[in-house]
Image 1 (cartoon, rainbow, N blue to C red):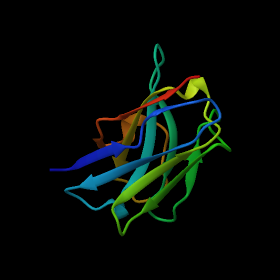
Image 2 (image 1 turned 45 degrees about the vertical axis):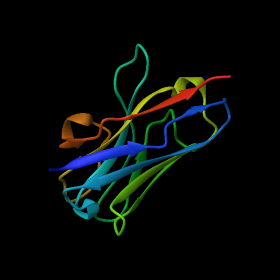
Image 3 (image 1 turned 30 degrees about the vertical axis):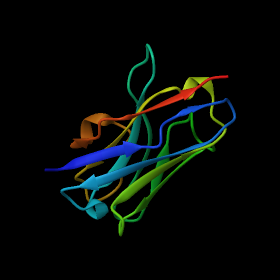
Image 4 (image 1 turned 120 degrees about the horizontal axis):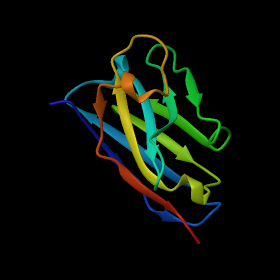
Length: 125
């Protein structure tokens, strides 16, 4: 069974940092593009960042560019999202997802085949 499990969400003050982790089981991540998405209160799902399988090309939403960093460790079957300088607008459920594509990646959720259950990030003073 293909499964993704996120962890690392927490309550953090504005300006703080968090590192989210995504662990895969039932399949190996090395051939999948990986993405992080979020769903904030009263907002639509937003693609936050993605990383390709072929050459680790990364993309970021403008709202997080310069603050968030996505990375992957294929040996550990893990993907990470380092989030710095957090803002209240970053509050929401964060989900990792895997897309069975050989090149590139996308922030469009419809391209992703496997989704995790999410981890909650709350940024508040």
